[in-house]
Image 1 (cartoon, rainbow, N blue to C red):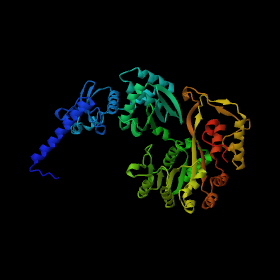
Image 2: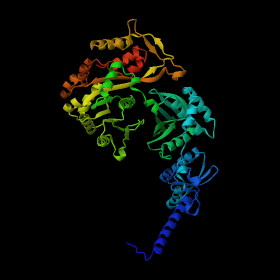
Image 3: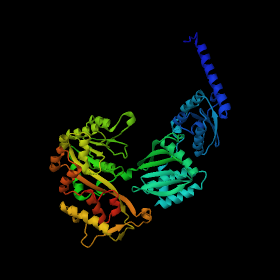
Image 4: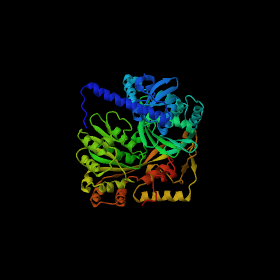
Amino acid sequence: MTIHFDDEKEEKELEDLQKTEEEDLVAMLATDKYNIPYINLALLGIENDALRTMEEKEARAEQVAPFKVLGKELHIAVRSPQPDHLTNLKDYFSGKHYIPHFYMASLASLEKAWDRYKEISYAEGSRAGTIDIEGSVLQELGKGIKNIGDIQKKVEEAEKDKIHATSHILEIVFAGAIAIDASDIHFEPEEHTVKLRFRLDGVLQEVTEIAPEVHKYLNSRMKLLAGVKITSQAIAQDGRFSIMMGDDEISVRVSLIPGAYGESIVMRILNPKSIRVKLEDMGIEKKMYELFMEEIKKPNGLILLTGPTGSGKTTTLYAFLQKIYSSEIKIITIEDPVEYHLPGITQTQTEEEKGYTFLNGLRSALRQDPDVIMVGEIRDRETAEIAVESALTGHMVFSTLHTNNAAGVIPRLIDLGVNPKILVSALSLSIAQRLVRKLCNNCKKEKGVTDGEKKIITQVIDEAKSHNKNLNNYGVDISGGIKLFSPVGCDKCNKTGYKGRIGIFEAIQNDESIEKIIPQNPSEREIREVAAKQGILNMKEDGMVKVLTGITDLAEVQSVVDFYEV
């Protein structure tokens, strides 16, 4: 049935009646069902200082409105006062050192409060509900942190400060992670405690334990920083934020997943300092380095890096781009995410939800008249085909591929649907890499050689000789016997015995011998046999060189390289 209004007055009267009925219903539910006070914000003044305790987007998402603050007493209107929702909100505001008092309000009432956010200036609003992570504060804190032990002591001291514990602990955690070059921060709730661990040189190290009641507030602060839903604890969430350290912008990617005893939080620290590594400092042996430089400077071709997650592929790609950068060429990257901003290079980031994938990014990049394109990863047939075609039409293309070794690149591309006859002309170089920890030069010591170790070493050396590769040319001298070193542990290496990481590489050049077998859809073993005659070290041999020259130990190389692979 359609209702016709004689004039605007009747229409307004009906709207007013509906609003009144809604307010009456909310008032009844507040008293009879939820047992909390009812509030009508249309009849009250809304305090800007109260609104500033929570950002507008978060207030709308959670359907709440802080409307009055007196000292630490904060009065908050909520639309749905479910017990779990109120508990989460209480934790959130308590983490900001407020004592929350809740009231039930209608949606129309809340919207009146939300409209007031427009009155708050951007400068004021940007501070609402956020925590300032000051780079200068972290730098100052970092001066007194040399190892994990220092972080543990500072966290324990900070926990005694009941008023500022949350902020101070968070600053110590970030300052410590940056000072000792940790790549990840892990908060792991257990039944009676929360473990704090850092990933150092690829390996998790326990830092300290934090009381669950302290972690509850830290959790809210970290969520606020990351821009995720603060009161949601039953869903996985991802966010990010940045910290300015001098001229460097450190990006932090945050991942939260629900667990049995609370949310597990992992923060990946994308420090430009750790990615800004020169190609010559990566542990690439001289002949291979010269090959890399020769290939990356060509006007066109396809260079692919392989290796598992965390093996340093992105760092190597960035090093390539920095080596060839010139104001005379245009370089475009498609990354996920952009980990480090390179001056003079057009960098783009994939956004799956908006349809900007590696494939679409590559198609768009080609319309920008680039000389060099870097694609973060080749995952599907279309991306592989366009990358190959781009290499054939005057572009230099860098990318990564998921295979176990350099010999797996060609079979993988063919498996993705790339025409082998086209691949012959497009592919320039296949590279595989791994990362191993370097022995701490301050505390490493010489150790005895077991029969098992001697057997592996002899086998690798003999295989290299059978392919006319003499490891003596790479600084290996075992004429006086085999010398191996083992980790000890000292203050300079956080008692681990290792300090920093170095790459282990292998490469296969797409020379005439490889081109001949590509159309036959060769297996990895067939490619390895042909490539062995190129005289370039494979990963087993490169790893062994680094073991026998005291850079790392055999256990580290064995953790990433299969010495028994045929």
